[in-house]
Image (cartoon, rainbow, N blue to C red; front, side, top):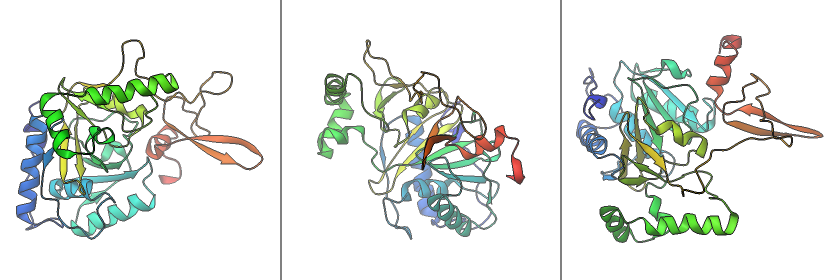
Length: 296
């Protein structure tokens, strides 16, 4: 699948379908095409003023508004939940800006999935798009404060300081302690910050059948992972990359208290005077396993 084919979307039947003007939509779509053509490359763009402060998901929201057409069906999730304050308000604003745009809480029905820090547990299908809210787009930011120097490092493929950071973690903790924003190399070239998704979700980007688009409104950068592209987490030969285990004291894996799943990312829910409960972080996947009870 070519980068261009993954972004072939019908033109809007309305003038200015969405909050952005036509010029902004064209600019952002061109930027996304460039990002898909050069996997992992950070494409600068003119981030627009939005009715919410930068840092509250404006980058992902601008990508969604630039891509949305009346035929789409939108799903917005925040840490796996469809009913959190962040998800509800972003969904409300996008649908108010795009009259007639349908929404859904079911991953299988969505064509656009805007997310804050989770990848759905359900296998994604061609024709869908993942759009990420990104606070910090550059993985080198934790080791190099100068943007000019970071650009040179990316241009030369010089990620030595990032490797040193991982090595220092191993020396200090005997493992890489990065729990989210785990750096990964895309298509054998650029290293990206995959947004603050947990390590559990990072393998889902590897050879995924859908396009993954990342927007940072405050930093005015966007980048992408095209469909069926190699995404490899940084790791040493003798210390392989590992996801969260959710192991109990007897080394068995915790299960969701609602659906019984043991193969999903779990949240630990404290209880007063009782052991903590473990629940699926992805509400839709949990409800799907239960056959969508109560009309969910």
